[in-house]
Length: 222
Image (cartoon, rainbow, N blue to C red):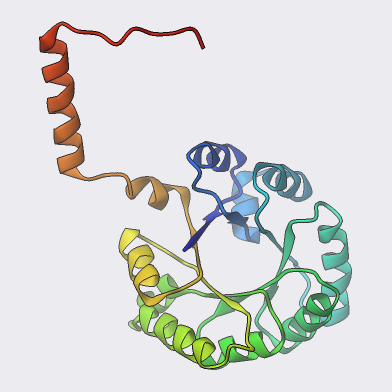
């Protein structure tokens, strides 16, 4: 499974990239507004940190306006992926952009029917929001299971399932078990994957035993 980091904070992506945990980045208007920085600058910096897709979302809601904004965004870098709402206009724009060789990410997907429409439009990715479905009493992972099954039935559909609205490590692991292609994950959830009490306990024991031995590993010049 690929990890796309869901943030507009460039420093957070840089730290995770050092650990080899960044396959791409997703942003949205809410994240960019929270960061308080120029949108195009953030996207450009993200694109320099990873060779993978960096989703940049349009603000327009009408097809032709979406295409104009998409043209400006994809000029920022070759790995910009245009993020579009899963609406009739968004689907039409995605079809046009995909035909031109531009990566697209159809967002705000809440049903398998919507996902199928995104795939028919030729989207590179479709983003089902599992956390928001959980919030209203639905099982978000049921949607992921349906999407993986449907797409698997038709190899001609090349759209990737990009699990979004990931709230905790359990969401990520469930998505991986179901065979989702990508998960877009907030940085804090990625860091949570490292933690296990037995790992912490074991490391503390090893370090205490090593210190008691009185030995040291000689350092060599870098």
